[in-house]
Amino acid sequence: MAHHGRVEEMLVIGKDEIRKLLPMDRCIELMADVLAELARGSAVNPLRSMIGVAGGDGILALMPGGLGELGAFGAKVLSVFPGNRAAGFESHQGLVVLFESEHGRPTAILDASEITAIRTAAVSGVATRTLANPEAGDLAIIGSGTQARTHIDAIRAVRSLSRVRAWSPTRDRLAAFVEESRTRTGLDVEAADSPRAAIDGAQIVCTVSAASEPVLEGGWLADGTHINAVGSAFPAAREVDGEAVRRARVFVDRRESAMNEAGDLLTPMREGVIDESHIAAELGEVLTGAAEGRRSPEEITLFESLGLAVEDLAAAAFVVAAARERGAGTPVAL
Image (cartoon, rainbow, N blue to C red; front, side):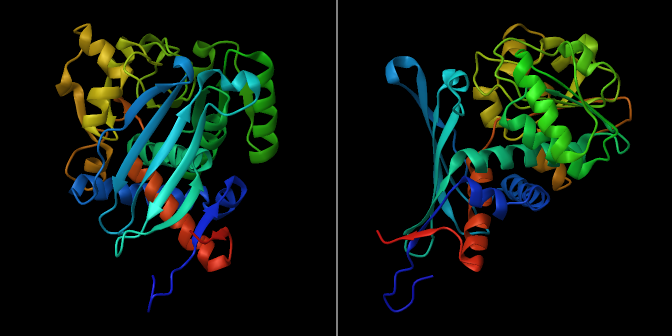
C-alpha cells in the first residue's frame, strides 16, 4: 500500500511469469475460496458485456468484479477471435487489470490468457474434487487446446488417474497434444478415434472444445460419470446434448450467468427438455454446505463452467502478491 505519498509502481506480469507464480494445486484452493465467497454474497460479479468487433469476426468482452475479503477489484478485458487457432494464436487474448481498494489505484496488469487457462481448469478441479466419485480415475478430454493441457493438470491434482483419453477433430493437433501430455505428465494419454470412443467408460469427462454443436451425447455416459462442460460460453453454442443435461444433476458457477450465457442449458430449456429448476445449485453453495452435491455413486453430475470475473481477479491478486514477494513482474510508473 502507499504510505506518505509514496506510490508503488504498477506491475506488468506476462504469461511465463504467471505460469511460474500460479501453481495448479494452489489455484484450486484459491478458486474453492472465491466460489464459497461468492455463494456467501461478499463478492460482486455482474454479467459480462460483449460487443462484436473487427467486422463481426471477433468479440470484445468486459468482465468486471469485486472481491470481498481480498479487497481487490478490477476487470478482465478479453478479445475472442475464433479463427485464431488456424493462424497459430490463442482464441482468447487480453488483460486482467487490478485495482487496490484504499484509493482505487490500478496496481497491476496481467496477461489474461494464462490466468484464464489456469483458473478455468482449477475451477473444474474444484468441481471434480467436490462432485466426482472418490475412486474415479478414468478421464476423457474432448478438445486439444490450451484448456485441454491445463485440465489434465487440474484433474490429476484432485484424482488419481489410471487412464486418459483425448479426442479432437484435427488429427495432427490431437497427436501433438497426446505426445506433449505424455511427456509432461508421465500419464498414459491415448488418442481416441471419436468422441464416443473417448467417453466410453470414462468416469470424468471434460469438454474443452471450440464446438458449437454437441460433441457429447447423453446416451454414451456411464452411471456415476462427472462432466465438466467448459468450452461453450455463448447462448447459441453448446458441447453437450439435451439428453446429457437431462440425465445429469446440474451445477453451475453462477445461476445468473448460466441463465444468460449457457447454451448447454438454454437450448434444452427452450426445447422443453428441462426447466430452470434442473439447476441443482451453484458450486459455491455445495462448498459452503448450503446445497447437496453428489447424492449417490450412480448419479451423473455435470458442472457447467462459464468463467467468472472474480475467478480471474482472485488468481491475479495471488499472482501479484507472489510477484512482489519474489521481485517478479515489470514495474511501470503511470
